[in-house]
Each structure stands twice: as C-alpha cells, then as structure tokens.
Image 1 (cartoon, rainbow, N blue to C red):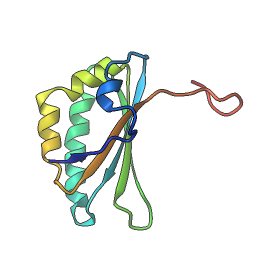
Image 2: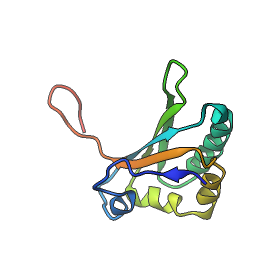
Image 3: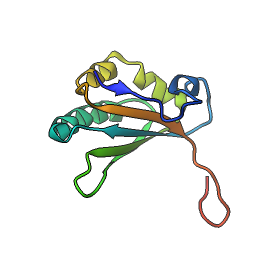
Length: 122
C-alpha cells in the first residue's frame, strides 16, 4: 500500500474534506522508486480513468521531474470538495491505491485558486 504523508503539517486532507469552497484543485506529489515508474504509470492511468467517470471531475494533468527524476506531481480539478471526497471514499479508488507499491510516497492536498492583482485571477 502506498504511504501517505501530509503536504501541510498543520492541515490534513481529512480536515480539508470538511470545507466547502467551490471548485478545488487536488495537488498530489508522488515519490516513486525509479525501477517502478512504469508500474506507477499503469496505476495512475487506471485511477485517473476511474476519476474521469465520477461526478464533479473536470480535468487532470500529470507532470514528471526532469533529468531522470522519478518525482511526479499531478493535479485534478473538481467542481467541489464534496465531489472529490465522494470519489476518494469509493472502494474502487481505495482498491486502485492499494496497487501502488509500498515504496511509493504520495502527498495529496486540496487547493483553491488565489487572485494576485496583475498576475493571476481566482
């Protein structure tokens, strides 16, 4: 089973499940054993295909570190925290996560866009 480490030491993903703020972005960092990248990508594909079928799913994108890195970051945009939590709590998702190797470490966290004048909009 994958090991989960909170991205923010002061606010857990479970605490975030209690908030409702409209659309959210799930950011998830994965540290993968270099020898297990292909297996990780298979599980990622199955899991993301599952998410795509869930209510409230908008889009997903995976990024890999360069120069031979086996660190991945993905983000999934959801219509709401409730939609993501509903998908996260489904047995099919938990079963997919169980397929990640125990050497994989993931850090999921929910975010909301922030407006910064002249730079980005919310």
